[in-house]
Length: 316
Image 1 (cartoon, helix red, strand yellow):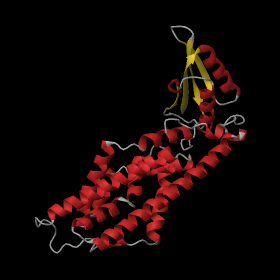
Image 2 (image 1 turned 30 degrees about the vertical axis):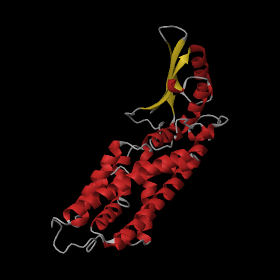
Image 3 (image 1 turned 120 degrees about the vertical axis):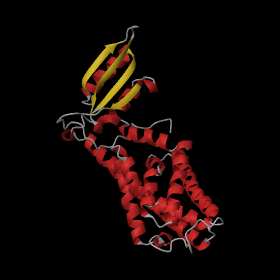
């Protein structure tokens, strides 16, 4: 269930509530006057398909940006009025703005993933590599790039792209540094050769490489809006973390040929992920827009002017 909440001048808030109900965008609206007088709080239920249009009307009412919010609440029971997998553009933009930032915690996770996956490459241990995939948060900046591309927000794309590249550099650097330290100490396996066994495919791009990355890109965007990105992140990272760690380990022992091969795999996978994710988001936006303007689809009345860009967030 989605709840739209607005607070501000009582006359404006009351007028907003009337307009939202008249347009069929809000149900069970409640207006609560503030104790100080002259101000009030509006709250009501909003369908996911109509959320962006409702937010557009709320912002057009002249209320302060931080006084209008859309809250997702868990619904218990048999209600079918609130779709759980409907794209809310304002929500996606807000998440993208947060996930595009280069944070110390993000770098820490990517570095740890590099160490764990590096040991997985060295010992040809699939369990360690899967564990590193679960640690890696690279799905977040990848999704932010897709959102920025669809929103034609160059700053968001550049910021998220920089975060993604920096994270991969940390993964490669830690895997490479660990290997470079273990090698002269004689702590690598006897006659170790990077990618000699089951990971040899990480140096060549083929149809499976691209196919898996495309499927993972679709899953990334579908998962982000249903809050399942943590689980699906493992599927996305299968196309990135093994190649990044392989690249680092190869660099650590000075195998330039395999470094270039792993770089090609990593680069092609990232491009396929972003292309597939962006296309998925474009299709979702068009479907959501069609549902929200169809009275029989439960999205409310006719769309309001400028509703296509209702979710634009100036903070991005």
